[in-house]
Image (tube, rainbow, N blue to C red):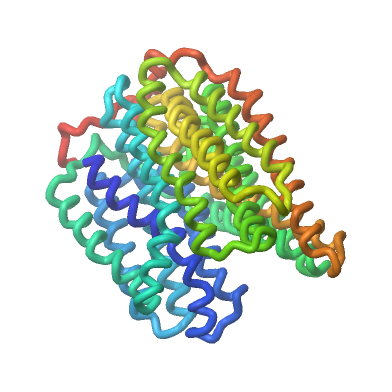
Length: 478
C-alpha cells in the first residue's frame, strides 16, 4: 500500500518543479510574458495551499481507496488537459486541477504511513517518504531539460501519464481501506476562510520580493499578505470553536502538544531558509559566476539526491534513539552552510560551492527532516495524524513563500542600492545578505532543536469518542 502511494506521490511532486525549465519555451510558443508564464508554477503552489487545510476532513470522511482513486483520477484529468491545451488559459486551468489532486495525495501518504507502520519502524518508513519529497523536486528540472531537448513541451505531461495510470490501476487492485471513517460534516465557512486566508497569504508573499520595483505593487502585495494573515487567523479561530462543538475542517488542537509545536517550528524555520537558498544560489551561479542553466542544475542535483538518500538513515536513527540528536546535527550543518555562503565572492571556486551545498545543505536537510516531522506527529493522538499532516503541509507552503519573498526583496533592494553601474557588486551583496539572513534563521532552529524530546513518546494519549478508534488495515470495507 505504501509503495503504491509513494509512486503516485512521486509523480505529483515531480510535477511541481517540472515546469520551471519550460518557461522560456512557453514564452515563445504561447506568446506570453515571463511574468505570465510564472503563474504556471505560482498557481500550483497557491492551489495546494488552499486545498491542503481541508485534507484532514477528507481523509477522515472518505475511505482510503476512494480518496486515492479520486486524487489519481483528478490528476490524470489535469495532466491530460495540460498535454492537449491549445493555449495558456487552459494550461493554467490544468495546473490548478493537478495541484488540487497533489494537495490531497501527500497528506494521504503521510497519514497512511503513520497509521500502518509499527512504532519501531515509523522513522524508517517516513525516511522513505523523504526520498520522494526531496528527490522528485531535484530531478524535475533535469527531466524537463532532457524532454525539452528533443521533444515538444507537451511531452512534459505525456511522459507522466503512463506512470499515473499504472499507479491508479495497481492501487485499485492492492489498496485497502485503512481503518474506519466517520461522518464528519464539512463546514463551508471554514472552507471559504481557508481560501480567503491561505491563498492571498501565499500569493502576497510570493509577489512581495518582485514588488520592490514599484510602490504600487508593494502596496498590493502587502495588502494581500495582511488580508491573508487575517483570513488565516479567522480560520484558526473558527476551527478552535468547532473543535469543541462540532467537526473542524482542520483540528487546531494539534498545537496543544508541545513537541508538535517545537518540531513544526524547527521545520518551518528550516524550510523558509531552504527556499531562500534555492532562489539565491542559482542567482549567484548564473549571474555572478556566469554559469549556464545545465551546469547550475548539475551543481544542485547532488544536494537534492543526498537530501533524499539521507532520509531513511535518519529515520532508522530516529527509531533507535529519538529525534533530538539528528535534529541538532541537521540544523547545525545548516548554520555552517549558510554562514559559509554569506562570504561568497566573484572568485569562489565552483567545486567548493558544489561540495558545501551537498555536504552541508543536502546533508543537513536530509538528516533533520524525517526526525522533526515524525517526532512532531508521534506526539499527537492517532486520530489527529491527518490534521497534524495538514497543518505541517499548509504552513510549509507559507514558509517556502516567505523564504523566497525575503531573499527576492533583499536582492531587489541591494541591486537598487548598488546602482546600474555596479550590477555584479549589488548581486554579490544581495546573495551575501540573503545567506546571512538564512544563517540567523537556521541558528534559531538550532537553538530550538535542543528542546526536542530526547526519547520518543511511549504512547500518545487517546482522545475520547470517534477519534479513539485506531485505523487498522484489516478492515477493508466500511
